[in-house]
Amino acid sequence: MTVALSEPLLQKLGALADTEGVELYVVGGYVRDCLRAERGEAIIRKDVDCTVVGDAIAFARRVATTFHSKVITYERFRTAIVPVGEYQLEFVGTRKEEYLPHSRKPIVTNGTLEDDLRRRDFTVNALAVPLNHQAYQRAQGTFGNVIDLFGGLEDMERRLLRTPIDAFVTFNDDPLRMMRAARFASQLGYRVDDHAIEAAKRLAERIKIISQERITDELLKTLATPRPSVGFTILFKTGLLKHVFPEVHALAGIELIHEHTGDGEQVYRHKDVFYHTLQVLDNVAEMSDNLWLRFATLMHDIAKPKTKKFLPGVGWSFHGHEEVGARWQARIFRRMKLPLQHLHYVETLVRLHQRPMALVDDEVTDSAIRRLIVHANEALEDLFTLCRADITTKNSRLAERYLRNYDVVYQKTLDVRERDALRAFQSPVRGEEIMQICGLEPSRMVGFIKESIEEAILDGIIPNTYDAAKAYLLEHKEQWLVQAREDMATRSRGRHEKAANQ
Image (cartoon, rainbow, N blue to C red; front, side, top):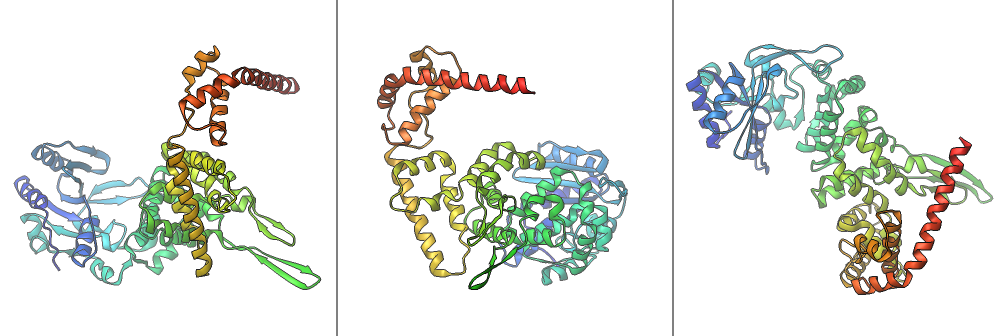
């Protein structure tokens, strides 16, 4: 079978390989996705993996020189990366790998092309195409001929993820491949081979030897796929999820309460929060590519197991789960080594995800709407996306009613935000001017006064204008200064009393 490698860059690499006297192959996901593109799937891929029979690092340096680029080398793994325009080229020498039991860092030795393809994770990623004459001769083919030593082409037809060698060996050598199986299943829409699933179940605990950074990277890649629920379901059923994200694993399960009343027995059950979350996550994935909106969606009900209570005669309650879940995010971000610049956004969505539904009533004040706008800030539109995705009822009439309600609240927020100029809201009188007017140094008092002005605007006492805010400050500054000093004195006494009692 042949694949159309129309990218001129690959032909230039092949010509350079002939000049340097090495065999060069394009391998792995690039070949797989070229074949998928030929079948009509929309594929854009700019990462190109190349295998070199010879000195891969020396060849990568020649590529960098030829294309006026730089080279990043990993001598231990005989690997180098060269960015060329919009492409990221990775060059790896053909190699064998041997893994020690408690490490995923392999001992690398020279190997053949077959050795190199054998060590890859799945047969659909173990395809190679020769790029230069020396490689053609060895492969007894021509430019574009696909080398398939492990049945990867047939597995692509079957849409199956299967390991080139025994799955227990493949996963035991590098346990991250178990998570990659879940991710590729979500990404490609393929089924994972039964033997691979069984191997993952038996080896799940071995994922603990993988660094947190690499685990988190695979989780985020799974979140970014068209149907994240597929991958997270595999992680759950294999037992991997309880090791890599125990809070999400704890969402699973349904508890029944049988309550005996004078009229007989009443059975109370709650929905499985894990599968509900996955359904909401897929809904969001259809609406948005925003990775951190997807992560917030995964987190939105994360504290329900912690806050779950049964109220006799009423049923199950999860009171306060949104606030508890928001407070958990800092700990989760630190443990999982997630980028902290996204923490506040995720906290905001988790904390507010039930707020819009509480604002459906026609009697809701503009003050309540203003507070939602200010608290959500730049995440306001994403909050409503999450709320709409959170409608998972099978009752179509009920779902339509919920959607209409959200549309009404959303329009209210847009109207109030525009009318009251609440974008990027803060006191029109800034801290520096407050200090000048009140004769203060930088302190908590300044923040107290600034917040008092903001509260007056949110409550509709004054309009959101500079003149109104300054007039309000001048009118109330003496009262606020006295109140602020009293509050600070109370806090100080509390700290001294606490210290004395210790």
